[in-house]
Image (cartoon, rainbow, N blue to C red; front, side):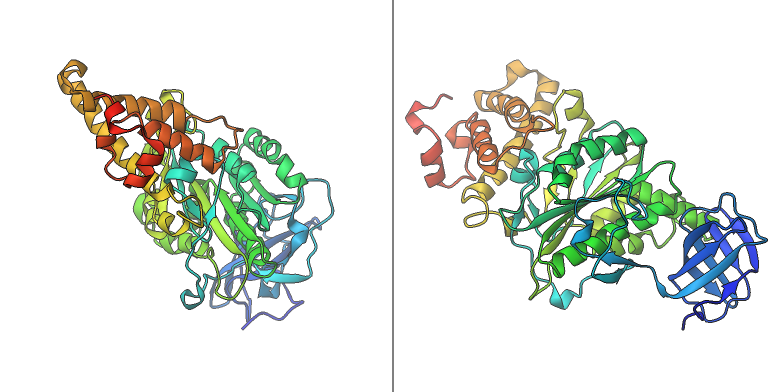
Length: 464
């Protein structure tokens, strides 16, 4: 049941943070869109969070600063928030509410869609099986992103997660098929927002980008709307217009903190670290909107970026994100301190759908074997390094010394990459082979003999 359209309610009981409490309402439903008229004549907008008897709790998208209880009028639309969808979003730069900030006209579309959206029906899901290449060697080779996957980036304060997000947004491709990026930034400083706009200017000019930027001084409630706007636009571009869409959302920790602030304003009982008890289901309502739909073209792939407070991977936001998503890319302060970009920790990173999107006919026939062997070799190298710290490098055997050399070669010949360097998959895999051949052939047992014969020197020419 919805409120009668056109009726204005004037009994504002309370203004609390971003929330407005209206008394005397009738027939108002949850998630209904509201228009708020101030006594000065200004207009604001809101969404119904809760209805208890005749009291509606409205979250004001532009915040409640400067509003008075007297003289404020609230009208309910009778429907949830809807936005125009279509190709008109491509090439546009908007704030976190979808209002253009690029000097252009309002975005128009041939149809409208509800911002709330819904997860894809599991019975209609098509299994992901094709790669999205980012141009970042460490991601493409070791934690390959697959169309329809949700693969988060776990970072910490001071690490270049925004640089990696922008580089990925600028370089990502799907092998010549129609492709676009939706970038949703939340809680960004103005310097960071300018960095994003500058770094993605070329993709925006090519009409392959939709940019939503919520800055740190924007209303906190806007942060809850920004990723939903991005996903609503992405779903139409993918499942109606047939494009493959990569949605990058950063920083999801800023989103979760906005959710916590609204929860506190509503007087809800807090759960872990004062986050609301429904944090898991709220995050899932975003992440589960990605995928592929059987019988429809296009796909939605999600790359959420989140910072771990104090680098704590057990913090509620990364912890719950890990349960919902299909792997993670973890950035390392240790690698960053060595002056290597991107500072990806390969042993803490994982793409659970990588096997479905790599190999012959998808990326390259040797890709899965090379990635598995490189991870195994790096794991052994880490063990050897810890052993060397205990007994000294001089006590190590020849094979162990080769593993120490491999770790150094991995960082500087494979992992290290310029922030604007778009590295092809062939180049990245060739570099991976170069690193692996730091080891003797006897240490490469996970690689098939025919691949070794094609890349490695004969056994009698090996040293050690």
